Image (cartoon, rainbow, N blue to C red; front, top):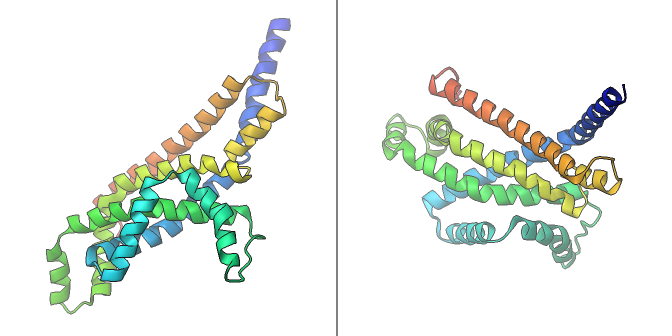
Length: 238
């Protein structure tokens, strides 16, 4: 009976630990989805600038990509969280009262956009200039051709790499706890500090499984989207 009781208690500890970690999963997913949304918009803009190469904007975009891709994300997060408020105070703009989540989303959006812009740019170039010429031949403007023809096809081409970047962004959200955001990683730090009753190894096994399971779900969604769009069952140009 004592052995059974010990097993039941152990299982209950595992369940409680999973529930405590999963309680913060919605916040992690919110950071993921919101940052991805803004990163996609910025990534498209940067990709178009890199393709069209307008002199001043091209230089700014090149500098931005070089800095973002060559500095650690944690450093960028600290620059935005600690540096941006100080910089804006020079212009009498006080953002110190902003929620920490805003700074996290700003950082993740700009960081991820740098990588997505290259994914989008390569997908755009893979579509081929003949598609753009065909659009011009029927009287479309560049914007219309981009929205109706180029970007929908580029989206399908970019899906595998897009999925990889989404998974990377999910893992990057684990850095948010470094400025006090209590996501699933922050929750683990709290659990460790409160002597939950389970060892450090078991706690990190649980968080690994949560991240792993979420990544598997993302891979499944991306895989399904690839099948749907490649079969032409959905059109993005409508």
